[in-house]
Length: 145
Image 1 (cartoon, rainbow, N blue to C red):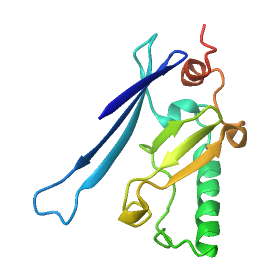
Image 2 (image 1 turned 180 degrees about the vertical axis):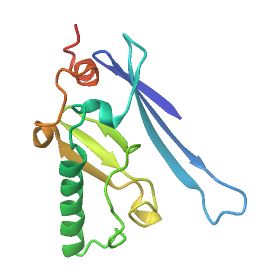
Image 3 (image 1 turned 45 degrees about the vertical axis):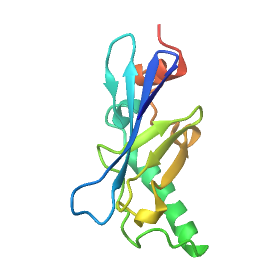
């Protein structure tokens, strides 16, 4: 299935589904988001939200690692221990009004039963690396000219 929304100049398409391969023990859910600038047609990736050459991965990785450690310490053993190695260049994500939500597919860092583990990373914690003059940010926040 698909849904679409428009936030300022950013078309956000959400795709979800379920694949079941022949012979598999169970199917695999799908969840993807696409961010398209309606003025240029450009598809944005996570890296496009940040300043060129900035180390945006480190603060995101630290926030995710801390949350995983806290959940494990609290007895929530949904994560595979030591499986999270950091976000990838093609990381799954979506945006809310105040955060970037990093998510993972089943089996990436946790058991299938955990679904799509999500981690909210507030924009305020990424303030130094967000490219507030960049096209992605401006399309999303409505500050494009």
